Length: 199
Length: 105
Image (cartoon, rainbow over all chains, first blue to last red):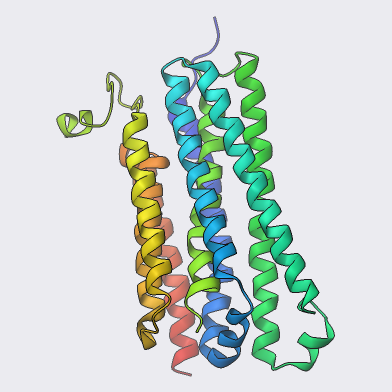
């Protein structure tokens, strides 16, 4: 007989970690707010370089993947193993789509000579340079979180295939899901701040 | 309260076993997509100093939907609810005090 699992305890542990993540990104948003306050014109210039369509597409991709991850937990609870696997595979595909979009987006910026230490940024107004510094820091850190989230979802996927995650025991899937939703949550704020409010 | 939760929970035999139906989750997704459409739509109009508040208001609404339903906060016990709200308070203090200092220096 296995030891009983403290389901609530497992979840509280994950949440405490998520709180630290929230404060981490919160600190970056404070930086954004302060420099936006100090250099509103330069930030508006910077915002014009970003593509609203790319941002919207990535927002939808992440929202849909959050839905499929939440639905995969329902599927596991209802013992629909095949459906849970399919939903997780689709979520991973969404994560990959997000990263590919990001790759093309960053590529376009590099092409326009907009990258840390580029000549154009060094010669431009300080606020413009800071804007792209924040853009690469925040979207880059978020991108790393997308990759970590995909790794966690992949591990959950394998554990489901091995029947290590079942309707009796799915804390790993739940916590991976929580992480994935946090990634979505952060993007919900990154998207309007970088792509929408600057005009 | 339990009756209300049964509306969109297929079974609620246990305190921590709330199974959300696919249909309900899809409705939440629909709401999120609608809010995204709204925030992108209004961004084509210049609302002056209201640009940031409007965008943040819609973003917070989306975040609330994700937290309550996708992240199951609505169905969690007191510990997670209270600790989450405390984290938000810390974040609010961090943001408001920093900004206070910057704005009125």
